[in-house]
Amino acid sequence: MAYKNILCKALILTLALSILLPGCAQKGGETFRSSDQQKANTVHYGTVLSVRTVQIDTEATGIGAVLGGVAGGVLGSLFGSGSGKTAATVGGAAIGALGGYATERGISKHDALEIIVQLDNGSHIAVVQDADNYYAKGDKVMVITSPNGGARVQHQ
Image (cartoon, rainbow, N blue to C red; front, side, top):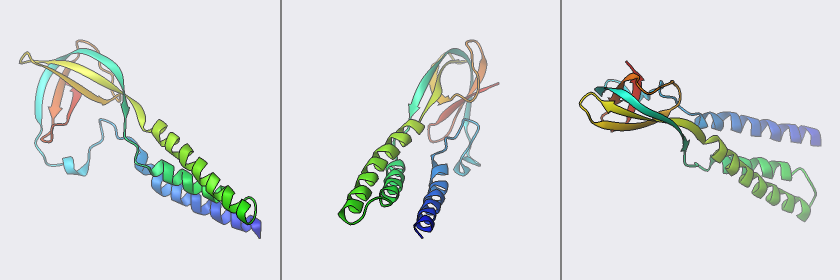
């Protein structure tokens, strides 16, 4: 009987994680939102002056801590009885929340590029974007700026 209870809780936890974790996936420079459709963007041409690797640190949403807390609480509830079971559940939830938060923070960091471009009009612009394409000094590029101020660099 206890085996079925553990299996049921593990299944519920797995389903919850499979529903919530895809929202943590990163979007690359080649991925657009549906709201980006049918909007005019400004295109400027230029030459890459420099490229360096930087790190993007997305703010934590708290989903990792919540999921970790739930998982820790479920696992903690499998141990002890009476007040010991309550302590194990609370302790498991606390440790799980800390672990989930740390995991989310680790997943939310990723490498990106800071690309400095000298536009054909002589001005300079710096764009930070996902490292999904290779750029080198001297590359001829387009800087595409959206109405909301976002920009990306693409090869010509």
